[in-house]
Amino acid sequence: MYSFIKKYTETMQDQNIYPIFSLVVFVAFFIGVLWYVMTMNKEEVKEIENLPLEK
Image 1 (cartoon, rainbow, N blue to C red):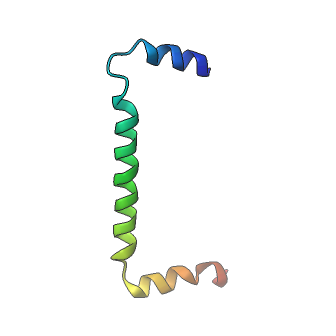
Image 2: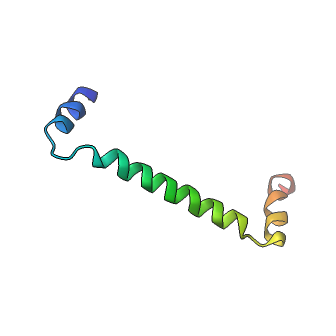
């Protein structure tokens, strides 16, 4: 399976754009989650941190 993907990507034009695109998507997602966590309401954080103990 890997050899098929490798042969396919070797024939493509501008194949170096895909790793850059995936890195940008990963970094954007990570920054988005980090921003969401930093701006969460304190009461919501306390409610979420006690969830495993309540059940």
